[in-house]
Length: 110
Image (cartoon, rainbow, N blue to C red; front, side):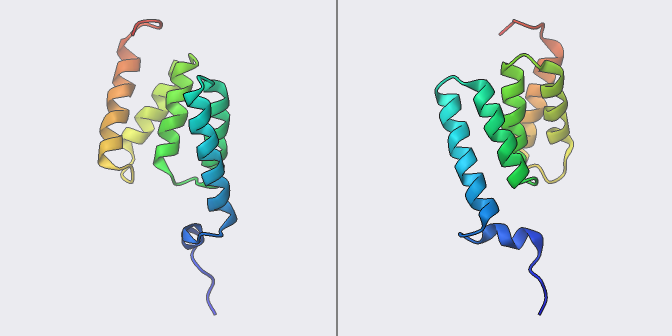
């Protein structure tokens, strides 16, 4: 009997990694809705650990870092997302736009 591929386990409803990811995603969204960006960042980092291949997670992490003032790290992550082949096209475009925006605007300008 062959072992299931690593990503196949994440599609099972009772998979611990998927359950953890769902939990942390919900907490991250709630934290953002409450204006708790630092808490949301913590939660998105937990999601990244549970789902390292999820590109949307890196996008959310970069957004949190930008809001918290870590522009260089946010720009780096947005740029990485824009350059990765496996990033969904719409996310790739948005990440490129935000990387450019962070590179051209002065801190504090909206």
